[in-house]
Length: 289
Image (cartoon, rainbow, N blue to C red; front, side, top):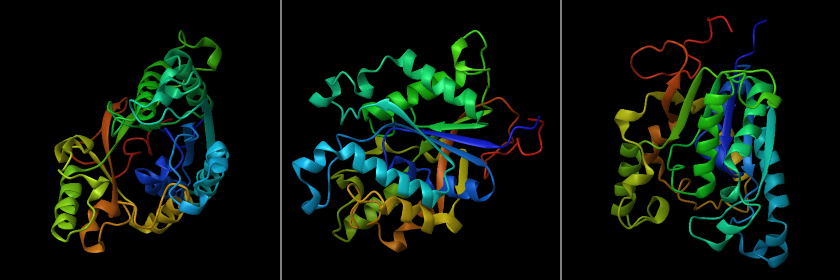
């Protein structure tokens, strides 16, 4: 039986699905690929950026609010399956919320990996994507999303592991979401020269948040789907203002930063060609599956 081409992406919080992967979700959904989003927490520790909404009552129900924002965003991106893991947002590294017993930072990682293995075996993705070892920017939930994704990539195809989680399935490729350093540096310099608030409000360019151009080996053109990505992003109204750093980059500095999404392929169980991939499913479309 031929398995439908399937993409699964593991994110930490609502809105993360839009920023680095909204374009590929929209693109591959439009191509008929089965798309699966796994969101590990509901972002309870997030800020509320709209002053009139920033009330104790709304903070108390922020998980519910952000889940509704996520459901609206998912529709814009054409995501077919949304799976929510049962963890609480840990908040930024070093905050007291990191110690909450229900937060993702305190999760038993073997148990959390087992939950993801069950989903991998259920949906049988060919492509699995999450963050790099630093979680992109050091958030504990992003780091744990990375950890369970890598562990599930290794374990899901092994019949001797997580035996109660379904029939084994080994994804073909594993990618990390990446921000291309040269593009962000160009935007940072250009905005600083104009006296604008720089991306992430860095007084000095924080290179640790970005990935060397030489490491990026997959560049996916999302230009036809950029409008969908931005529509989805704007559904996260408690989190995203119009002057948010990503949206505030002047149009003449955006260029390839908005035209493409960037990834590092870190593992492949199928042969891959030399050079930059322009399709995450390269090597899989015509292969038996």
